[in-house]
Length: 181
Image 1 (spheres, helix red, strand yellow):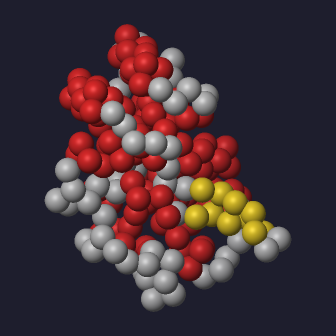
Image 2 (tube, helix red, strand yellow; image 1 turned 90 degrees about the vertical axis):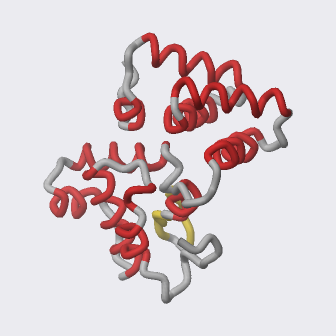
């Protein structure tokens, strides 16, 4: 996969890119279907609404809304308002996909630096790598997202979230799908 390309270029086939990179994305089948529907609707200038997606995916509107929230939490989807209409932006898919040849530690550390808004110290980098080794990269990113939601952008909070999830016996899939108890 090319690292430098214009995701939003008119010639870019986002659906094809998504299909080609599904294994690099943390998506279950329903989430992948909703992502593909969003990309398709965006490509054709169709308005996105939960009723249409519910009918197409054969799931409830509440489930569609929950999936929107999960995709947003994972960093894949941003919803904004411009030119008098709601926009569903999937730029996060490219940013969050695991690029072959890109080291785990660099992408994970970059996530923390981006979220914290500063460069990390060597000891902080080592702590993040230790957490990733113990809990897995996906869980660490979920904990970082949780810290951001509660505006607690520090490693102690991230570590406490991971420990709490571990004590509750939550799997990565449960955490990514929003199950926290």
